[in-house]
Length: 442
Image (cartoon, rainbow, N blue to C red):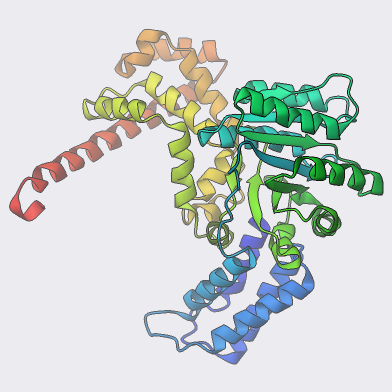
């Protein structure tokens, strides 16, 4: 996400490296590179120019403290302005009401149905009882797709087989929700290949019939500035509440995200990446600005971890680590939990400094397949007793996993190094606990 923009901005800031102070000349050169980076990322030119004009003005108006380098100052100014460009603050989803109604709109192929499934999972995690409504009566696979997604996330799907009237379907679904205790209704609507009057009239009638709390416009971020144009057309008819950017893990330059808020004055509420139902992020402008500038996003990483890691399991593992009993069963369990958090490269990019280091490295979920195959090839005894892996056992494991013996040896070595590190960290924590019992350790 935003990899090209991040690397271009990084190069722009490098022009200030080693400079002792802010000057009109070095600011002008840096601002010129920042503007180029934004325009190349498909940001609207007027927005890019306005953005860099503000950055220049603020940079030249600063008295640089000796402790702050010109590069650091420029990054701080750009970070602050990016945050404002992206919306300034996080906009919460309005799911108050009984039931709260959310209408999903967008073009065909934008990812509306997949997003509807992800949104229902997200809302369910907040303690709500959502109902998905199959309101796309034109695309043959839309209803079946929503049923599959609903089953995956454990959310009921309301359908009316044979009906071709989305207004009636939506109205009947709300009656059904009231009668069956569903306190949030998510209505997936039909898309078209392009904006047309028939589609706009139909979804406007659905809006009038159900009076939704939220109308979310779903847009494929890979369509660039066309996404902004489409959003404008929909907003004129629907006056939607927020934008959802999908396919942010694709080959996108990200300019649509940086332009939509300024042009439409509508907040981006969610960012969707990939097909996994867990791969949905609430859009936080300040966190996204930090990620674009390569400063990571530890808060989001921790939140993702909290979603998938069970506290009881974490406590159990901590006890095993303290007794130096962490084994391959535990390791495999942790790998599977990490995979639930989303795209591995995106997760690593949330760690400050790591994003730049791995931008050219091909990392994906397939990277774990070899490790999983090796562990699955072990017997239960071997998985629970890592020290039992003799040379003959390793050969058998390699053959069973269809991997080379060097891969098995590499995994065993890495696992042992990890166990040693865990043991060392555990001793340090133990010393800390003992010290806290002393007067000077409190």
